[in-house]
Image 1 (cartoon, rainbow over the protein chains, first blue to last red):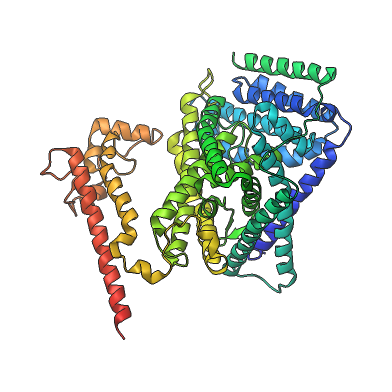
Image 2 (tube, chains in turn red, brown; image 1 turned 30 degrees about the horizontal axis):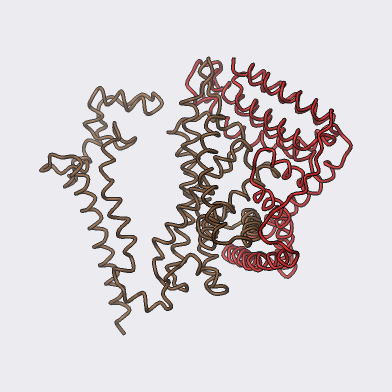
Length: 273
Length: 357
């Protein structure tokens, strides 16, 4: 199994991305609270809440923002199980692993001694670990909610409100499409190799396979870039970019924008005290 | 390597967004001037390639696997400016759409990997490969070193950003608000994984891809190799000129060696018997070792073995010199000279072996 990790691991990663993409698109089409809001309101509101959670010096405020994220997820018909699998479990495991030694390594007032080892867990270390984990969980939940409740093309178009140059918005949109295309290509290359393979692949051959696949993908990339350019030219592209901005703010969107602004400002103000 | 939200304070994130912005601006300006309409598909497709390559599982010597960032290969094929944009775009999509890296920390991730990584990779590759032929093995070595160095510089920057958090941001009780470890823990912890696993993955991918491109698509390597010799022989005849950029770099490094004088105290673990006998120095050593109790007096073994060999230039300061900075310069020149001499002797021995029937 270990020797075939290059194939199995890569295929697994590709399929997971495709699966996430399909799931996100399905959730973004649902009839829920966040799905019904203007993408610009969601983008500004969520960025504001993320900054508030990141800036807060009080655990209660971070907890309140996390609670708000859960309420928004429920109102938007995003299953908590999806958040648990895609965000909470991974973030907790990764950040927990990083934060755990801080319990003992941070100097401060000892509150507990680990039996047998005798290591002192300090109050400051525990608090620091809780700060880190709660902040990571909250901000990751908010950013995932934004993407799960908004079609990707709308997220990109909404970036214009943050003054992101138009050319970058177009590049991001095209990149996303070509990521999916290239993941499909790379997955097919690994799959075809797997279907012709008997037994295990030596690590050296695995490296050679991965590099050759990346090389083929790179040459396809450069060829694709030329093809796409010619296709764009044939459709009249002369280097100028236009976006069809069909978003329209309704009273409901303005109300939610005000609510996000008030909540974000309150969180920042209370978190700074 | 991808810093999530919550590890860095908003002030640090803002500073790193501000640090990345000029590079994004200059990259975009330079590329627009050169590529015009071709820029959009080229960057889009290459950013997609970088994203997909980051997902490849690379088997590494020792039975483990690792993921590469692909920053060196992007710099080698596209040049540093396009690489900065392509890697930044890939990082943006990873952060926003797949939750790999934070939104507030995006400026930091782009600065570490896309900006610093691309520039280090490009200049290392150019310095080592020089004017050698596109098909030269030296380009493979250069790409490997560029990949290894770029990812480690990015990791070092990340570790420094983590390490300064507890120095600057604590709550009223003294608890760290963000990444909790100081520099003395953050740097070794971060570098241990990158000097071994992640660095190796980047080295293998960069060197392997350049070797593959040399055989299959050498034209893709020519954009960042202006003046490359047509054949290997053309370069080998140039002798020392072929490694001139390396020698210039070495000379520049020698000139800045006196910066070492700025560091105060003794390097951790490099204590002399005199340090261990001195009361003030002992207090400093204990403070730098998480207040661990030192053994009483100087350990006998250390005391005995320390007098076995007396260095001609102890502490980079030959006894006959009274200026510490000149001592550093002299030590750097002497040490580098010895290494160059050793390399010449080994090269001469290999050449003699090849000439013999």
